[in-house]
Length: 329
Image 1 (cartoon, rainbow, N blue to C red):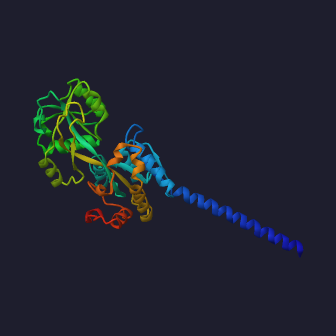
Image 2 (image 1 turned 90 degrees about the vertical axis):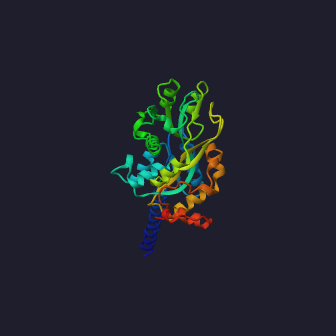
Image 3 (image 1 turned 45 degrees about the horizontal axis):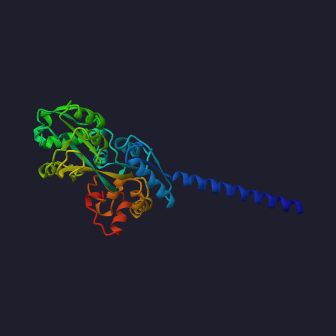
């Protein structure tokens, strides 16, 4: 009997040990499953340093996260769509196209993408040489314009603005990225270059040292027409005097906004925490990149182009912000 009792105790103890190990393994697996992958951009841009710091802050506040490099906005929206990413930084116009199956997302609508916050403006710049006789968008008629890389957000923005200005069909279009377009402008191979980026844009700064430039104004009637056409993501922006060599006065233009988006599959509690942590730690983000100086609760809904995640809505309403009904879809 004594040996039977000892044997029984041994079996029970072994069972408890195995059970404890299994629970620990399950807890570890659960923790790993909850880690949020944040798609950012290239290492030389703004998205990556901001996204990396945000992931670090989230992790320190018990929301495990990691940031990874990516091909930026279009790739980031697709990553949320296929579940590769649970969060991403991207342009608000690209988020709109993704959610509505437009342009580069035609036939592949991403319905599970949700907004968290608009972050900072990315300025739409129609750049010309300072010695050019081109003063308005209408003056581009008959001119050669670098409109961005094929299929890019820049190319889409260029088309929308120039159609609103009535000159899209009368320009000679050249597909070039920022760096190529800037060099072509410097060499006189194009008459204007369209660039969508934070200002000052390094590629424009580099050529403006030797070749002064100007930014064409985009007046209110163009913005109003775009809004009437349903392009709700555009916001007013000004390129300040002195931004580039040759810019001698403040110039009104437009901007899209970099934004934080998440998957609709994340829980309300998780996204509430993500939103709260974002705005309670903006100072840490500002230490990483100057663009974070423009991130604020007051502008979090400016240019928001897709429905918000319920977790973000909960945070904003808790803070007394009025969330438009169209963003609650």
